[in-house]
Structures are given as C-alpha cells and as structure tokens.
Length: 335
Ligand code: ATP
Ligand code: MG
Image 1 (cartoon, rainbow, N blue to C red):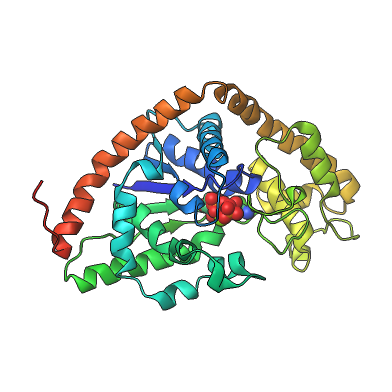
Image 2 (image 1 turned 60 degrees about the vertical axis):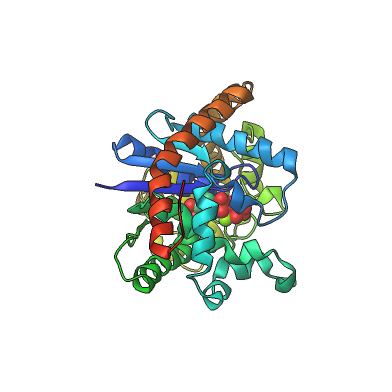
C-alpha cells in the first residue's frame, strides 16, 4: 500500500505556489483514501533565521491553511516536525551517511545563497536535504508529492536510502517515488517569470499569499509582468514567453483545465482581457480558504491541540523505525 508524506516550511505565509504545487494535491491524495502524513517542517524553517514569535504564528497559520484547504486532521496526520524527535535523530544518522559534495550540488542551496557568502549560511541550510530524507524515510513513505523545485532533493533522499541500505547490508529504507504532476508544479514569480514563486521572496508583489484579500490579489495580477504580445493561438507560442506562460499555467492550475484548453479559450486575447479573468478565478478559488483560515486562527489553542494529537500519531509510526535504525547502526537501547 502507498503511504504519502510531504511537508511545507512555516518560513512565511503560504503562497499560491504552495497551494497549487503542494497543498491542493495533498488534499486530493487524502480524498483518494491513501494514508497521508503532512508536516509543518519548522526544523527546516530555522535553516534561515526566524523570529521566534513569528515562527509560532506562521506554524499555526500554515496548519490553518491545511485545514481550510480540506485536510481533515482525523483522516490525515497533521503535525509540526519538531514535536516528533525522530526527525532530528534520523537526520543526524543521515548526515553521517550522505556526503558533503552531494549537498554542495543542490540547486536550492545555490539559489538560497546566491549573491551571498555561502560560507556564512547556516550548516543546517547545507544539510537541509539530509533532514528532508529523514522526514520521508522515518515513515518509510512510498510517495512524496512536491513541486518541481524539490525533485533534486527527492533524488538525493533516494541516494541516501540506497547508501544506508548498502552501508549496513540490508534493504531497510524504501526507495521513495516523487509525485510531481499537474499544471501547478512550478508556479513562477509574478514579477519575474524565470524565478520560482516563494514565500521567502523579499518582494510581496512577486507572490499571491493565501492571506491576501480580493483587492490585493487583483492588484498583484494586474501588475504582474507580461510582454506586449497578445496571447498565442497555441501552447507552442508560449515557449519563449515565461511570464505569459506562468499566468496561463496558474489559470490552468486553478481552473482544473489543461494548458491547451486555457490557450484555446484565450487565443489572441490581450492581457487586459485575460488578467481580470485570472484575478476573478483566483479570488473565487482562494477566498473561501482565506475566510476559513481567518476563522480557525481565532482559536490558536485548538490548532495547537490538533498539532499535538497529530504528533502523537506520527510518533507512533516513527518510533519503531528510529529504534530499528539505531539497532542496525549499532547503538545500545537499554530502555
Ligand atoms: P521558501 O521560500 O521558504 O523555501 P517555498 O515557497 O519554497 O518557501 P517550501 O516550504 O520550501 O515553500 O515548499 C513547500 C512545498 O511547496 C514543496 O512541495 C514545494 O515543491 C512546493 N512549492 C514551493 N514553491 C512552489 C512553486 N512556486 N510552485 C509549485 N510548488 C511550489
Ligand atoms: Mg522552498
């Protein structure tokens, strides 16, 4: 049987990219009846400094977004990573299995240190993929739905599992399958169609946040970067037009139509016609989620209770795996 694990960092408010590339698909997997484990990865978030009070707030807000988007904490396991100590324990063991060179080759590390002195970034930022491998393998997850940007990290998780199995001479960890599907797996920045939309981008205009109201969404889409050509007659014509392609992709992701269908619908249209339609669609899809998030955020104690309960359920699955891992590695467990 399949077991799905995935996570989102509470490193800021969730974006349209997180929604289309991750959250929306997390809900679909849950609704297909698959066992689903979803984690707010606060240990990952602190690889870049986070204000403590904001980290707490962002974690609760992310939990509210999950529930508002349709995650049912009874059917899925929803929790924050730091409450299940096995993540950090297994990550350490994987730090000793993975090679430093593997980490330096990761494009996320390169992107997140671009224009900065990489030597001055946290050691955690470099080791990030090792913790991510631990997140997945602690539950022996078979499938991991993620956005396109996490593909390389998932490949590394497979490499780490394979090297652990090889180093200790047994098939213990599964080789996990990435699940990267649909129009929303790579939502780009609204101000630069060659850059990924990110919650940690310094420019708020580059992204749509799940907390944005209808006016903010309309304004950001109106201002989104485009070229001066009308929309093409076929998807081929989007090839060298990253900004146009991004807006069409977003429309496809939100509407459930294919890119071809969206292109056909708006063939030859000006952005002045297309953008208001996109804004209306985004508001229609996102505002019910925003409203529900705001309602849930009025009771932070209830959110904390849900996360605590999720952590207990996650720990019950993780504990035997970390225990057996320690036995394999040769660590004494006398209690
Ligand atoms: P940060 O900027 O702090 O890294 P982020 O927006 O990249 O934040 P993550 O928490 O790193 O969000 O990623 C959570 C999930 O959302 C992952 O599965 C990731 O692939 C997906 N995701 C992130 N950004 C996008 C995007 N622009 N398009 C599609 N999926 C995305
Ligand atoms: Mg990211």
